Image (cartoon, rainbow, N blue to C red; front, side, top):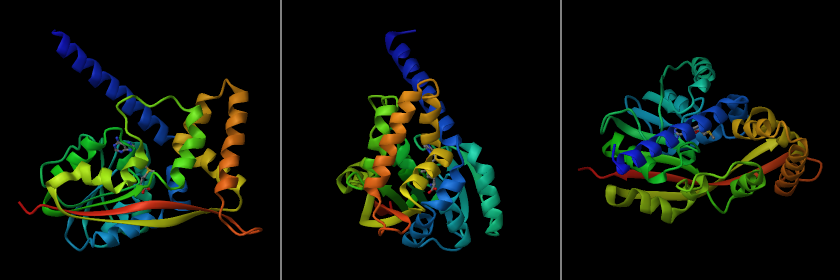
Length: 285
Ligand SMILES: C[S@@+](CC[C@H](N)C(=O)[O-])C[C@H]1O[C@@H](n2cnc3c(N)ncnc32)[C@H](O)[C@@H]1O
């Protein structure tokens, strides 16, 4: 084996290990309960923005439990819901059944999609693909599997929005990301998205919007995240033998939730998140 082969093999092994850790984190808690309580309206917004219609072939990337995928199927599309974390598919299947639709669920890394070139009319991702570390690889894959003249739609948290504060409160308690990983909210920068898709898209509409997550109180919001949101559950699990660190995280997380609450006094807590709605049309040829 040459030194080059050796380096490549080590990079592949490191990526496999990283993805296994990411998958394990998203499998913890109860993502479906979290999604229904927080981001569930985003799927509808994305499907409407992409004008998904009957008979279209749609791929939803990092689909979670089907927030966007189920709405695309309800619009009459033939849908594949793909995600790194198949542990959440069962909840997605139940939700799809309740909506009276069927989809195909496929385990897939957004950086290496197991689909052919141009297989889909529409490729979507709601606050999902942004979590894969290599943004360029994700953009390349979304373009590759979308047919010429097709649509790519994304809902991406913005760097200036509340998500940076949310992850900022957690960051001191998390392992440092690998050096090649780009931060997820960078996908909410118009310039970054323009660079990632480059001249492979013939139009690129980007609109900043907000949605609101609600809980009975800031403490209730923290509890919801601690019980259901996999990455937060994973951080607390990693602190099991460091009770003073876990207490410090409780304090910092509650401080964030109290600071971020924009609800009226004596009313339920509200957390207003900004996102970038991206709709791109790939070049016709
Ligand atoms: C915040 S959830 C969003 C899920 C869903 N799109 C929604 O709107 O509810 C993020 C999702 O990204 C998935 N994910 C993280 N890294 C991924 C990767 N490299 N490839 C595919 N999915 C990934 C997680 O498993 C999780 O389901």
